[in-house]
Image (cartoon, rainbow, N blue to C red):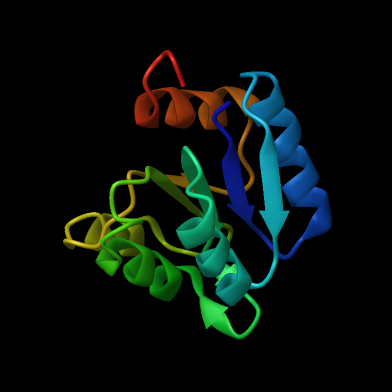
Amino acid sequence: MSSALIIEADPRLAIRLATILAARSLPAAVLADPDRALARVRAEPPALVLLRVELPGTSGFAVCNRLRRDDDARAIPLILYASDVAPEVFDGHSKLRTRASAYLHVPFDSARVLAAVAACLPASA
């Protein structure tokens, strides 16, 4: 069965995202530590990664860049989301080789998250 990995330090938002993904029958694991998350992606590649920009000790942009430069992880769809990033910053990041598959601003509603997931994953995932 396909699964998702949520890289999020806020437990309430992580639970909300996991609940939204469950509506699409996509179980999700949650990790707050980016290094542990990167190791998990390499050991057990998920069908999808949801990554918060604002993480303790690092930036989600840096984690995204690391994932996109990793031969085993670069093809995994990745949704980058943030509460404190200007649209122009996301627009600039979306033009890089190490860009995310989709971008969301917090707060978001379930429909926007599910639309981003649907755009990233084939119907069978």
